[in-house]
Length: 608
Ligand code: ADP
Ligand code: MG
Ligand code: ZN
Image 1: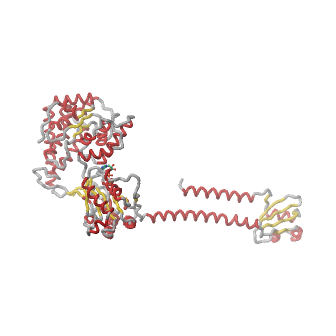
Image 2: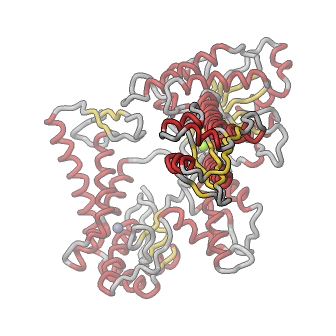
């Protein structure tokens, strides 16, 4: 129950009580008569005496009974009786007492009847007014930043020890920490300390974590705010929040301001849609103004993080603002091992757990993925009531993180199982027999996420550059499932639709973005522009002619056709191997790398 409703209830209750009390006052056991009846009684000499109390007329009759009536306040009773045609003689014969109207009781009754209801109304009104004012105050608070300040020496602060990998970033930030600790050392040499550090990296690479580690290491106040928190419903709020944030920070210098996900406000100006992009611009302008406004050595360092540095406004990146830019790379094999180590530290691992092997099996995983992997492994082990986390739980978690949870309850009929087994065998066989495609790590016909079955392929090493030939082979692998269905069952199921999507997207990128088509030459087709609110590249600017569009389609078709031809050739040449894998899969459902190699029993060609 909200305070308001409770208060309303209390007041209603009070009103009912007071009303009841008032009603009680009036309850008397005398009979009420009309004033005309009184007039007749007086005329008939039936009245012994009368007492007038304000407008109330208490009458005692000659037979001893008491009755009561009321009259208008201004007229005197004798006048009233006269107006009713009572003989004045008769009236004079009845003793009339006028009760002293100044009595305390009289005033009390006046007060209770007239003032109290007003008083109550006033109290209720005052109450509501006060509440509304409270809300007003809240509205006034909108302009305040609401930045969370992490205490200087909170318990177990995050330090650089908790961040694995990202060596360059750590080095860069160590310098910042050093400045916050001993500014004199730098100032003595005339050095200007950067005002802003921009952390860039794909999601989950540890940007937020690293910023918190800086605060933990430097042991200074740390104001933490997310870019989206600046933007509110009301225009101008963002800007005033920025002002407030910097004001607070300057008061507690040396300190760090951390703006997470700065792309929410720092996107290139003039490229928004909808109304609130003005608000965003104002907020961004205010950030720029504030960053220009403080002295280089004021001891306030702004750390910002983004996973879209490409969309940031150039003004933010100008020297004197975020002039230090730190790139956080996705973790390589050694980093992954270290990150897994950090997140395994507080977990009881079984003897058979090999962190290195896990790291090998997880190329492309971000720091956040790896943390998630360890956590899923622990959850899995706990659900099996184990005391330690076994390697198997962790290996299973890799696929869970990659593809979603297993769906053992998803029952396939025999026909579906067979199609799925041969489909996956097709992917695996084509991957195995092409020298540059990623080797098969695991193949399974247990449903996971949205896939009926899956073939896990992993590069043996971390690569940041790929060749055209590798992509061509990838397309063949993607279409391996489709080819297998066609060859072995003479028909196609919907199971191949995701494969086709992937193959088409890859072929399109090869042709339009990476210049991998001879015919179209070394240029890109279609400039991708960002839609501010969706933040995804959904809007393609056509910068080519209709003729080229036709050629693009033709080139994509060519790549797909080539891939399919390769897949079909390999499967047709090794039908016996396909049967071996398919049957084995139907039997055991899942084949690990070694078991798969044994089953297919063909040597993988050397990489060229
Ligand atoms: P980002 O802000 O880059 O999207 P986060 O810093 O929020 O990513 O990372 C999410 C979580 O992933 C962290 O809390 C941490 O547990 C884990 N993590 C990510 N990168 C690392 C790393 N380099 N070392 C250790 N843990 C990491
Ligand atoms: Mg983050
Ligand atoms: Zn498939």
